[in-house]
Length: 345
Image (cartoon, one colour):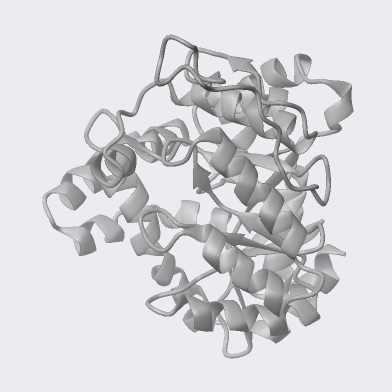
């Protein structure tokens, strides 16, 4: 099992990126760089490429609305070059709040758009002329649109690799099925290992049945906070992830349009999901955080004595996770990463 970590920053992404150097030496295999509606991820990924030597550098995620497929292709190929073949392209549809609110683009046909972006990016990495006729994208632009001067072009620069791993962030059945069919890896969020099969098993099976043998098995990345120690003070650290769970379940979207709230319901927390959302949208964030089920927090993170943490690691592996994502909550994150790396190896 590989070991990865989301790049965690609060106000100073450069400082957070500099800390990855020590974690790389401790055994971290991959770093996920998000952007949401903060700094863009490609800038930070390029910075990481210059600062590191072996770690894979992954977009986690670039949304498929704010850039053209060709721009995403250029980013993936450029990062792969400056990193010496260490790029991983994480894609996702994000959500209506970010896409329509921050980017001003209608949140339409997210699955079809993702599928076409993947097809065009892979075509471009093979340095084929970009010719695509889809519902969302047409390359080149037809002669009756624009100036009528578009022609098929291939990426100008020689690429480092003609394939780059493409991962997709997905939660809904149709999106998960598509991911299992065409992507190299899957990024589920707020993962509950023991309930994953019940929620996504049918969708994964549907997609896998259509999957090309050339792609190999679907990789899966999931995880949470790591804090190894005895006593109630260690378990109390789970309270630090309550705001994140409450944000997604309660605030990422609107009533009737929140993928994470739907996921909480699928996990069996229908009552809590509604209460958390109502409180969060009413501005009562602390009250919402207090209602996040402890059972979910314990199952989705690695917080407790060594024996318990090892049990949770085994549960994630049993659920199909191939790249464990960790957020060390300790005075010495490097030592924590090194310890977990030893266990998962």
